[in-house]
Length: 186
Image (cartoon, rainbow, N blue to C red):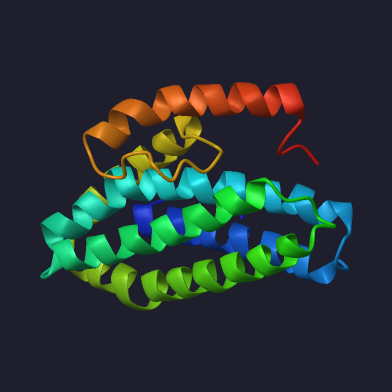
């Protein structure tokens, strides 16, 4: 699936890619080492996606939607739960019994979050936000994902301006660590 378009199209494309990773993990038997490789790749995409949403999508939700603060706070809470699961999962190998429990929890949490965004948040934002603003947000989200961290950092700030200032530096360190360890490469 190609990336591009407005912020909603961009994020839905990310959702499909994440779901594809989950499907590939589910297709492998428990203990298969490729489950860990795929979980790392899914985590990389989830973290990049979350950081971009936190920097640009949720501020737009706060600005354009009635009750936007409460909606954005709920989404940030979802991210926080998922990020802690990803952090716990980071320390597990595929043959660790805890791996299966955590990846199952992550899939449930993320699938619920994605469905909520696509069924509720995105339609409301599309109706309330001017098309040109959605296009601009799409560009900003794509740029943010290029420099975003690739590992979960549950204690990192999740609201502007701190998240926008810190994410690129943390992302650079994460990408360096990934390059040195081969993490995220299939």
